[in-house]
Structures are given as C-alpha cells and as structure tokens.
Length: 433
Image 1: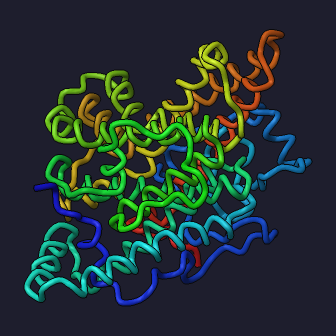
Image 2: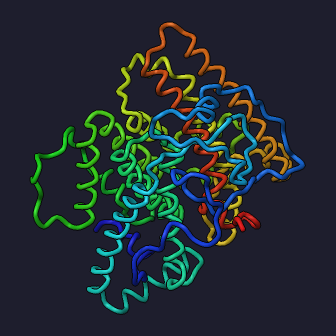
Image 3: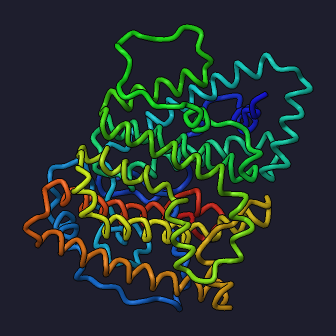
C-alpha cells in the first residue's frame, strides 16, 4: 500500500477558492508593471550595518537607468521602502506578474476542486481524523490554517517566479509558476512530516516515473480514466515539453533530482546538523538542498538558451557562486521562520545562521552579521567573474546571457527574500503600513 496523500489533509477544509495573493496594506509601485508588495524587512540588526559597493554589476545598473525592451522590470528597492544592503544596484521582476498569478491560481483552484470532490466521498470519521492530524502537524486549527497556507503557497509561487526568473516570456513564466507551486507544496509536506514518513506529493509521482518522456504526446492523445493527480502532473509535463523539449526536459529532471534529495536526506540531516565543523562543509550540503539542477535548468528555460557541455563547463565558477549566494540568502532571511517552525511545530532546522552560532559560539544577531559579510564577499567575486567572462574573447553569447541571468536571479532572490510573506509573516514590523 502506498503512502497516504498528504496534500488533501492540508487543504481539505477549504470551502471556497484560494484567497487572493494580495492582502491588506501595500506599497504602491510607480508602474503597473511592478507588482505591489506588502512586507519588507532586513533580518540583520541596524547596528551590524556593513558598507556596500556601488561600483559592481554595471550592466544591471545600466538596465535600471535605461530599461531595455525585454521581459524584465527593473526596480530600485529603496523607492518601495525595501531594505537593500547589497551590492546589486537593482532588483529585477518579470513584467508578466498578472499572468503568473493567473497560472498559479488556476492550478491551485483545480487541485482544491478535486480535493473537495474527493472529500465528499470520505466517511465523516476519516475527515475528523484528518482534521486532528492537520492540527497536530501544523500547529493550527484545521478551520483556520488552510486559507493562510493557501495564501502562502500561492504568494510564494508567484513571487518566486517573477523575482528569481524574471527573463521569462509569458508562456514560460506561467509554466514556472506551476513548477514552483509544486515545489513548495512538496517542501511543506516533507518539512511537516520529517521526510520519509510524509505522504505523496505531485513531485513524488514524478519521482516514481522510471523515465521522463523526451517529447510531448501528439495533440489530443490523452489517457481516459487517469486519476486526477496523475492527470494534473501529466498535463504539466506535457506543457513543459511542448514549450521546449530540450531545456524543458532538463527542468523536469531537476525537479526529480531535488525531490529525491528531500526524501533521502532530511532525516540524516537532522542528526548531522550539529556535526558541521565549518561553514564550507555546510555550504556544500546546502547547494544540493537548494535544488541546484532545477535552478540551473530554470535559468536556461526562462532565457531560452541551450548551452553545450563546453559552455556549461566554462560557467562553473559563476554557477557555483550563484548557488552559494542563493542558499545563504535564503538561510539569512528564512531564519526567523525556521526558528518559529522549530519551536511551534518541531520542524527540522537546517540553516547557516545556526551553524555559525554553534561553531563560533556567538548570538544569532552576530551570526547574521557575519553571514551578511560573507554574502557581500560572494557578490564581489560574482562581479569579478561576470566581468572576466565579458572581457574574454572566447565567451559565447549564450554564456553571457546565462551570466547576466544569474545576476538578475540573485538580485531578484534577495528582493523576494526581503518581501515574501513566507518569511516575513513571523517578523515583527515587517508588514508595510
């Protein structure tokens, strides 16, 4: 008998459609191309402020001053009252945020609708048991939590797409929203159930596939009677491969690799967390946990490039710096959320702030300040590597496109981290008035 399907337990008390992505007060952007934000915070106390360079990433600065005709909107975060302690001169957002919201909402609406149909056929005792299980696992009443959880997942899928992969056209941005929605649905289930005992998710169904199709099936070729979960996953896979059978397949393979990692590592990681003797060892682990293959594939998919193995090898340094900066940024900004989840729900906490605390015997504020310094040094290295690539006569156009996309993605990830409801909901004073 297979694992139980956990997602319906999270969502089954929903009686309506998912809540809107936006809520309450917000900081109005100066352009309709820029999505409104509702939260902004800096996890590092002001007495740990560190000077940043204003000379790095000239190409990104030029885009802010003279926006090109592309898929991106370039943002000066401080204009929106978002703390911006970084060398990146701007944040970047995909212009197609409304279409991204629509795509994520359509998928989540479909999932909720199918769950509601399924719930109607369950016995009353099973429903009550599921509600009690939900309350125990997630630390909230089954009536109150799902709407908040839906809002968080939907918001994360939208903002993760538009900030981290801003170069996507409309079709690819819509696909990325669905991919990130499935990632965070999977991630929350695994975290809440300590990995191996968690029920199946959509990505687990993908993981069970012995091999992915190399191309989408012919139009109109469907399999009647396919269970709704498999049908939704099949439709997603077909949409990805129809859009781009090369980088689309790479994207799906990245999802499989990451979901396997989450299943096979999380229990071991709980015991190993206290054994990291230095940040370097932890970072090596964290880069795998970040979904490295998926992230690289997403950059290729959203920029519509198909690099050769030789071109990828020539980008090894900037790809590594990308993973280091992204993982440590997420750790820094998610620390308060992870600590809250550890204390209230017993969730696993795997975070570089905690590694620095344990190994340097310092408080969390000091550890955060140290981590900020490390991030700024990574930005220095990133700038130097991008400029080296641009000045190298052997660098191809595809390599320069990927290198610029890396910079945009990291700037976007920082903006996402500083404004996302997922992290900010537990930070006092983060909500904009």
